[in-house]
Length: 296
Image (spheres, rainbow, N blue to C red):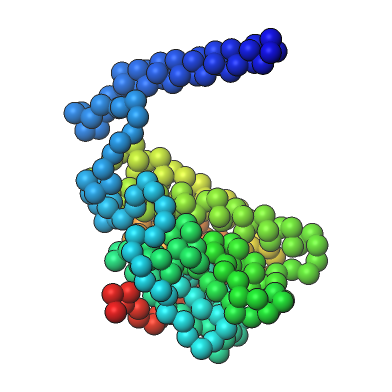
C-alpha cells in the first residue's frame, strides 16, 4: 500500500507539473503578436470550423465518422475506386492505367466540396474520410479488401500485379524510401497551396514558411534526378507515380510556377517531360470519374 500510495503521489505530482508547464507555455504564447490583432490564444481550443473561411474552411471538423447515411455505388468490376482528380487521386489512376487494368476497375467521383467523403459508405471504406479509397473484390484469398492512403494503394497494386516495383532488394528499399518520402512531403506542398491560393487572406508567415519548404522539396528532386532518368534509376516505379502529380500541381493546380521559379529546376523539368511522354500517365492525369449523387 505504501508503494502504491507513493506511485499515486508521483503521478499526481507529475500531472500537476505538466499542467503548470502548459499554462506557462500558453501565457508565453499569449504575449506574442497575433493575427488578427484581436485574437487571443485560449488555454483550450474551441474554434468554430464554419467560421474559418477560405475555399475549404468549413469542410473539416475536429471529429471523425459519418455525417450522413448513403451507401457507395458499386460497379461490376472487381476494383472500385472512390476518388477525385486531385494529385493524390491522380497517383492511383496513373498506376491503374500503367498496370493495364482498364477493364478491371470502376471509378466514382467523391466530391469533397459536397462532403461525399463523410458519407457512411465512404467512411466504411476509409475511416479517415480522405480520398482516394479502393476496394478489391478479388483481394488476397478471394476476400473483399479496403485499401486507403495513396502509398498503401500504390504498393498494393504493385504487389498484386508484379509491376512498377523493383525485384532487386536494394532497389526495392530505395523505391520504398522515396514512396514514403512523398507521403511525408506532399502535405507540405498542400499547405503551400493552402496559404498561397486557398486561404481567405494572404499571411506572409504562412506563405514564406511553406514556399521555402516547397522549393526545398523540389530541389531535393532536382539533385536526385541530375544523373538518372527516374526516381529509382532507369526504370519508372510507383515512386515516380506518387511524386509526379504533386510537382504538376505546383505548376498547374496552384499556378505557382513563376512564384517558385520552377523552370530553374532543370532536372525536374526534364523528368516531368519524360513522365508526360508516357500515354498512360497522361490518361491517369486526365481520368474522368463516374458521377455519384448520394442524395438519390
